[in-house]
Image (cartoon, rainbow, N blue to C red; front, side, top):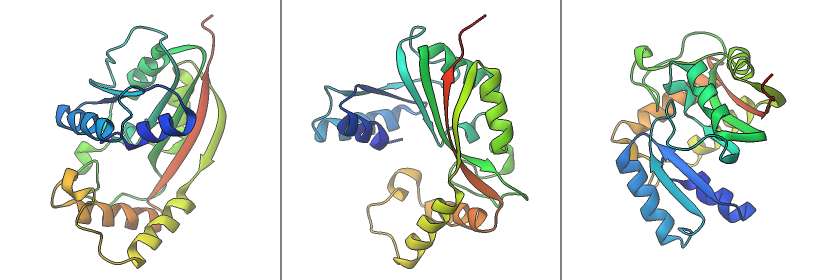
Length: 201
């Protein structure tokens, strides 16, 4: 959204990172913050759809998808497009919200209503990724860690004036509270998984 993970990865691993977002204002904000942190030589951003990425085939060693898939109905196309981006032996890492049991409460940060949300279970997510030409290397349920984070956030009191609500709008506090409640009540979970490309037959 504002490029924080891209800047973190570039600073931590001394790698080049390209971020993609569907929203041009988010890309502009990410570019601005990246320039302010002196990372423009290593980190760049493009406006584009995850279903039609603006890159040639096989140009990336790793693709990271973070809190994106629950916005996208066409999961097979999403994962095939990610597969197209990767070099042979490339890695795909996903960190996303998944269905865990029961109906989620809305609104949440990515959707105001169920009609705008395209959640899958962790198992269905992994199956869809593998069907696109990947082999799973690691699968981890990070729901407990997310619950701990939300509990600590709630205990810390009101957020500072500069928070994600500046970007997400005035309803962000309610969206975030519902996400926390969905996690605490076992309605949603957090999936972290790593896959590698499978050679085409």
